[in-house]
Amino acid sequence: MISAPSSARTQNRLPLRVIAPYAVLTPLYDALLGDRFFPYLRRAFEWLAQRYGIGFASAADMACGTGTFVRYLCERGVPVVYGVDRSPEMLRLAMAKNRSTSARFLLQDFANLQLPHPIDLITCNFDSLNYLLGTGELLKALRRFHANLKPGGHVIFDMISQRPPWLSSEPRVEHVTGPGVMLVRVMCWDSRGHIQTSFISITRHGRTFQESHRQRGYPVALVAKLLAQAKFTLLGIHDFMTFGPVTAWTARAVYVAYK
Image (cartoon, rainbow, N blue to C red; front, side, top):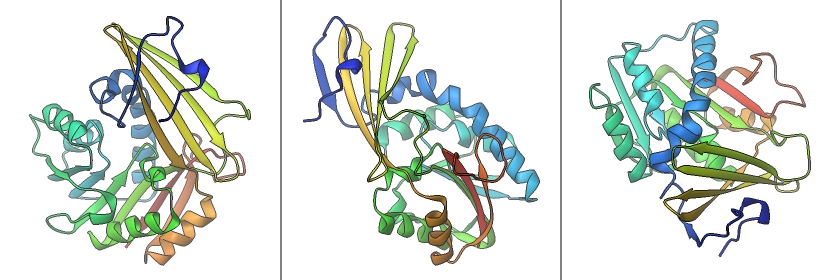
């Protein structure tokens, strides 16, 4: 059993239960995390689509989570939109959020992606691909992206790099509060394996639950190499926040490639 760092425990030491990722976080995800990140995501996507002249009539958002980006694509007037996730809890919320849209949802993971038909665009946001801890796993996912795109179709995704998103060797602690709920996220970085482990403690209704998430930071050059091995043509790699070229200080990069 994984124990939280002491800084992640609430001061009143309520009973702690360790549970599967997103088992409790899902209904709180938007208010505590997703809504804060989406404006940055939308800004980056719109800049990239304009910068590279990417037009599309069909799209799939991989690891779609609660379906916010799926709804955004539908609101842009994209005729065919799929949301794909391996979490039934996330998909249920995504379907409810998109009840008024024509989006379709699929319970699939990266390794077994099989869309009903090839499409023009695949997106994968909020460092979801970093959950693939092995290089072979990431390559397989990129190959499945390639197989599900039309010729000339594009892929856009962001990933954290091998540099941690904070400038200290100490764990990074974030506190987020909402009505009747408190979230404490403690992020630890293994510099040798480039593994980020996030301990998320959620206190709600007098009980505290903990989820553990592990992600691998990938060097930009390695991701570019894997894209080539998956038969993609790379269009650009940008710093997610500045849109400029990636540098040694880039913590999150966004990639654009086509089939």
